[in-house]
Length: 102
Length: 481
Image (tube, rainbow over all chains, first blue to last red; front, side):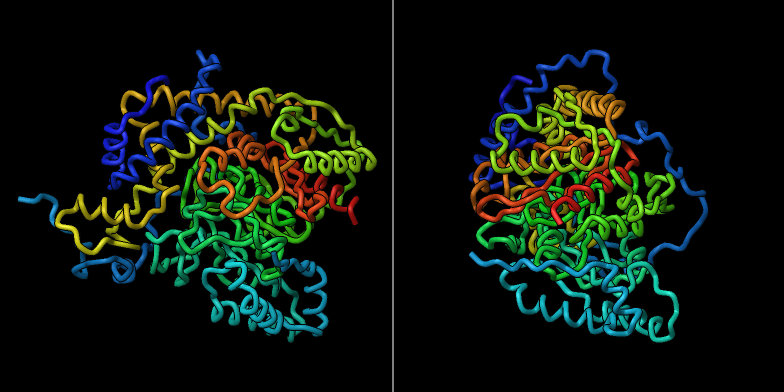
């Protein structure tokens, strides 16, 4: 947790997250991310050797949840209503721009 | 500065009037819509109104009352819903441009349960974009103003939910809390806010921010009504496999129980440097009133508290980066108009649709999860999360509740922290610990500063012990009456 983030890393992470940042935005994010990462580096003060990660808290609850519902077929949303919410469809599928530029 | 504070009527008094026929649910709804019409432009609390649905529901309640039939528990109560919860056919923006125009096809479970209990749902409340913020200044639809002082923020992210109750634009509301988003705005606006145990309330129909932390909870003008509302929305839901099947108590009755003999823990770490002196004075007076009511006050130590904010921002942003991947311009919401390829369409839609704080958190979360950094950041944070949770479990072996300030300061001014993300994150310093541990809590008004700004006391209790938190909060409230 020591290396500072570089401009190239911010650009790479933005690409992974499908965010297109302007040069100004990249600069601002570089500054903020470095400040935040410096701050979270405080966690290194703690020795967590052998501590199991806690992803969510249900294991701490005395009473278990209701569990998974039965695997039975149920009505799903009406296709025409779902597609009506989409930016572009052909009535059966969602339409998107071409995947590759040739 | 302008002040729009007005205390909502209690559920019991409204119910009595509807039962007696001296008012109707329809006229009550009309009164609330008039008030919203009058002051919403000053406070920016409601983003959309669901008048047709609300008035139809009010008529159903009035028909029951006219026949003398027994009324459901929230019959005719005007309620507002944070705009991260979906209602069929009503806009659901999550405070973001990327969901502009989106009309959900179903109701959140909490929405169905409130309506089944007779509540009249007035409309959708402003909030920080995707519930990310502590001041409601990250909404794409403009900030909410604090009804106590319009120059100040209402807190966030459920700023609209807190302000609506404070200004009597709704009798009660629902919000969501991931790191403090119910408790901190309730504290800033001088109302009661509830953080239920994680798993207590179904998240079906909640637009997800960080799923292991997200919770839905009520705001109300008094402890008893907040407790009644939690009783309505809590309980197992087959549509949310993580919802708890633990029995749901009559929380309002629990809140009426005396507190004498309860052991109250005071963690010194929540009264350290950074706590506003007027907030400290108000909370110390509240603790004295608990002692006077027969509680035993005991010091407890939670030394890992200082690691909670860094842990929270790694866990929450990692989960957010995954949850917000669904907003891609394909199935609903905003799509950037001119893109040649699919990849460009994703990037343009997300770049134009998301605000700066959302992008910042997606980037931080993506970084914390990326190859080579996962163990150092996300993995480390999850380990510290366990230590923080275990620290609370140990403390609750010795005390029934833990009492702290809800926030280190009263409501700050609009624009005061917008340039410094870290300073904004620290507004949640006393709330993120309970979020990470999954325990429950209630924030209750506990006095005012010299400038008249509300101070909130946070009452925390162990997993599934909401009844205890309500009892203690009610005792603090009663001492001020």
